[in-house]
Length: 117
Image (cartoon, rainbow, N blue to C red; front, top):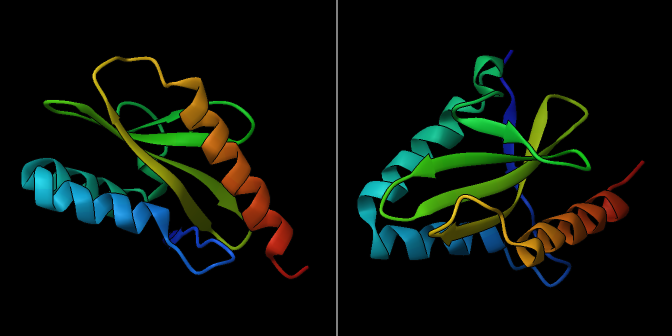
């Protein structure tokens, strides 16, 4: 059984990762294609480790693509074999900026708080 990929949605109905991917598609179609292929691969458990994916902390993981810029989609697991993608970034360095990690953690907490028991 494959995992289902879900995009985090704010209480206002915004979908930040989808917006990030649309901007990426317009600015760098090659990296967009690679990230989309990575998201498809995440549906299979064998890709939940390096080099495609890496565990961060507090239950967060990153899907990683190295291109002109490092492109990352931050995500977490939820029950029912689901993956929730909460944040997308591009940067030149290898280190994940603290503010991006905090954004992902805040979105994770928001998503979990708003789900039905």
